[in-house]
Length: 192
Image (tube, rainbow, N blue to C red; front, side, top):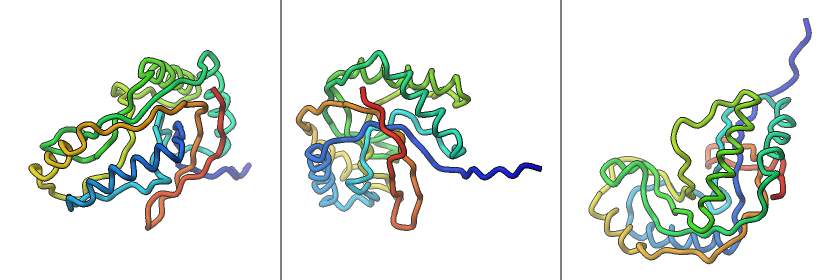
């Protein structure tokens, strides 16, 4: 019997954000933190624009995933985005996630995500069932939330915006879940 020496890794594909954009997102988090909403905030190094969550994959499949990424992004060149607006998923009544929206070349972003989803489907990763909604997760709700306080906090940030930034590559990340939160490491980066 041949022994399988591969290991499982938790992985996702995302666009990395420049430091100045991350800093602006942390500023928005600080304003929200001051409202004492009972939210577990994402650390600065954990904020990114996720294109596809792969889940637990076989480490032997990394090469295939990177090849699919390369095929998907071939027709694309760098494009401009910006963080804009703060909101919650699924809605104010049942808020589970606090996010910053993404604007700019949203059409290009959606097309890139769709092509990536299609290429990954060819190698066995199911397509997303929900429509892609580009966002930057800032925090996750821990328990019951004061909707009035949350609504006021969101209004205080109604004009939130970052400066534009250029998406220049797509990154395959490994996610190690630890007691202090997930730690992400780059497995591969493919330039647009």
